[in-house]
Length: 215
Length: 282
View 1 (cartoon, each protein chain N blue to C red):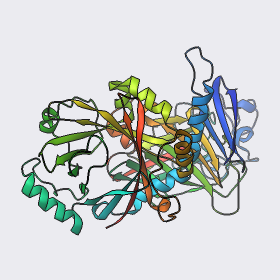
View 2: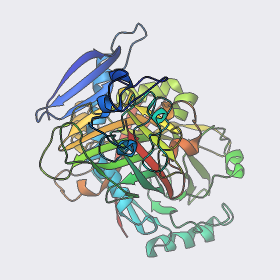
View 3: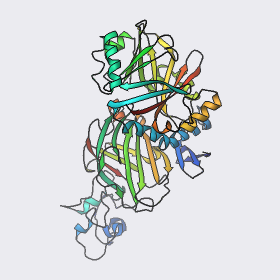
View 4: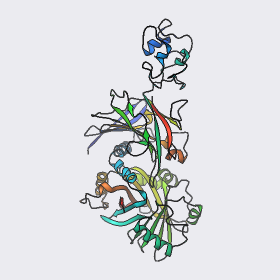
C-alpha cells in the first residue's frame, strides 16, 4: 500500500498506516528521518513517487518526499557505459558482457527469488532492444516476471527526472534459455522517436553514459 | 529439436508460447488474423525465430563482431560448395582486385578503398543476373550518394549502410545492388515481401537487396538476407527440394557462418538459390 499523496505523515502509525513511514518501510522506536534515506536500509535505493521524484539518499529529507511512495519500486538501477558499433551488417548500442560497453552494478540484489542474478546485456541490436539477465553461479530457470518496466535514462548516470524510454515488460517478447532470461522489444514499434538514429542506436551513436533501472 | 506450442491470453494480449524438450521457453505476441483470431502458423514461426535468436543466431551475430572488419574474407556457399570469395579492400587479395577496378572501372566512385570495411570479389558466372560474364563485385560502406541513386534510379526512403556495384568485366556494364531494411521492402513491394516471408522458415534480422541497372530497371531477382539456425535451414531446404548451400560433412563451416541469403525470382515466384556466408580473417 502506497503512502498517501498529501496531508500529515508520521514515523509511527498515529495518523494511520497509510500515513506512516514505519508501516510502509519498517523501523520502530525513535528513529531520525535520515533512517529513511533511500538506500540506507529501510527504503530501497531508487524509490520514487508516481511522478518519478526520488526519495533522497542524502542531504535534506522531509516527510513530503514520501508522498505516493512506493507506488513504483526500483528493483535495480545501474549506470552503464554504452558503446556503439557501426557494424557492416548491424548497428549495436548499449552494454553486452564481454563484447561492448560496461556496467557499474550488474548484480541485482533480489530477482525472481534469487540473489545471484545479474544483468549481462542491455543492448539494441539491429532494432531489437534486449535485456538479458543471467546468474553469477549455479543454475536458474527464468520466467516472464520480476519487473514491470525497464526504464532508460539516456545521457545521464542517475535516475533523476523522468526516463527517456520506458519499456513495459508486457510489450516484450520473452525467452528462457539456459540460465538466462531475455526480454526483447522492437525499437521501431516503441512509438515516439522513430528516427533511424534512434532505432539503430537507442543509446546514441557514440560511447555514452546512461542509467537503466528495473521497476 | 521438438517444440510444443500453446496460445494463451494474458492481460488481454494474445501470447504464443514455445517450449522445447529441455523446457526452454520463447514467448511472443501472437500474430493475429484480420478477424482478431490467432494466426497459428505465423505465431509459431515468430516464436521459433525468437527461440533461435539467442542461441545459434547469436553465434552468427558474434561472428561478425569478433572479426576485424578490415581483414575479412567472406566465402559464399552456393549449390553445395564455395562459390566466391570477397575480401576487405585492405587485404592483400583485396588490393589486387582494387587495382583491377582502378584500371578497368576508374571513376565509378571517388575511391574503392577509402573505407576499410569495403569488400571486393571476383567471380565467375553463377546465377542470374550475373550468369553471363565474369564479374567484379564492390561493396561500398561509404555513404550512398545521390549521384549513385540517380544514376540507377533508386528512390528508396531507407537504405542500409552499404550498397554494391557489380562490374561486368566483358561488357563493362554496371549494376547497382541497393540494400534496404525489412520495413522498406515491405513498403515498396508488399506483394513479394509477403510471399518471400511466407516462403522462409524461422529467420532473424532479415533485410533485402534489389538490383538496378543504369536505366533504373529493377531486376526480377531479389535477395533476402538473414540469420538462421543451420539445422532449420537444412530441414527447410530438404522439405522444399532446395539445394543446400554447403557440404554438411564439413564441420568447420557452421562455426564460421555469419549470414544466410536467398534469391527469390519475382516472376516465377520461387526461391531459386540458397546461400550461406562464412567469415574468416584473410
